[in-house]
Each structure stands twice: as structure tokens, then as C-alpha cells.
Length: 203
Image (cartoon, rainbow, N blue to C red; front, side, top):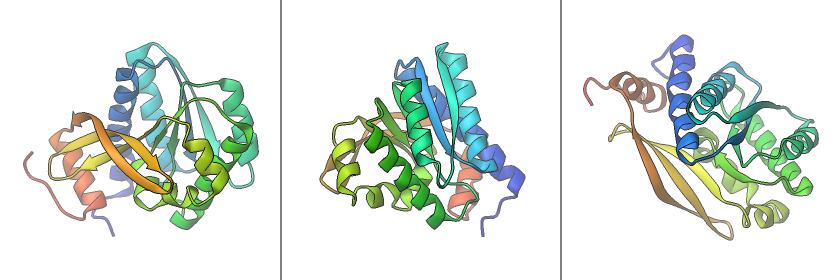
């Protein structure tokens, strides 16, 4: 178990979402969709992402809730919104296998509806193999092969959050770092306690 309280987990998402929102603004975007798992933790990172992006870019965003059985509806609504980028923030307190299933089905819905725009994938769903699982589906693989894909990851020892471009070769995934953001000592400590079960006393 992580050595963090639920309150700290929520605050950690606020800190991380702030950096994700800044990264989106730094990409020069002005219209971003955020699709997030229907739980408190994912709503926390999603709304922090949205608020920061709006503040820094002057652009527009919208929050879409990812739910089992509603993947086709979400795909239609995101397509109608027509974002430049869709951020897929799947994780939180929902059981991870259920989250992966909804993530894959959401991408299948996007592929079937041919939703436009690039994608940014949340580190949690990426780390547990959500994208790799989705790429096993031929239709999703073909759809994503034509997209610009990004993922934000954490450098625990460096105290940084990285924005990476995802390079696909069939089902093989490679990352190319394109930007990095220094985190605060407070943020680094929470990241390490939450995800690595260790404390940080300096950065």
C-alpha cells in the first residue's frame, strides 16, 4: 500500500494535472478534450489539467466521463467537439483490469467513429499495459498508427515529469522525450510515496 492518505492522492493529482495542462499549453493547442475515468482521483487530475490549460492557453476544453457501456456515446460526443488533442486520463481508484477494459473499448469506439485529433495517454494506464493491450486490436492499431500520440511519464530519481512522443511499429512501443518539467520537492515526495513507496527529503 502507498504511504499516502486519500487526501494526498487527490492533491498529488492536482500537482500532476497542473504540469499536464502546462505541457498542453506549451504545445500551442487551443482545443482539448479530456476523457477520464469516473472516479475521484481521475476527476482530480483531469480538472487540474483543464483549469491549467484554460488559464495558460486561453483555449477551450471539455470533460468527458468514461464509463463502461457508454464508449460509443463518448466517441460520438468527442468527435462532435472536434478537439486537436484528446487526453486519456484513465486510472484512479477503479480496479485496474476494469479500467484497462474501458480504456480499450473507448479507443475502439474512437476508431470506429474515426474521431479526429492526437492523443495524450495518462502514465498510469500506459504503465499497466493499457495501450499495449489496445494495440492487440487490429482496428485500433490501424487507427492509432495514423495519429500523433503522446504520454507523460515520471522520472522519480530526477524529480521530473516528461512529455514523450509515442512511436509505434506494429505493436511495438517506443518513447521519444520531447519536453521535461521539474517538479517541486513536495510533488516529488508525493510521487515517490504514492508510486514507489519511498520518501524524498531533497530534490
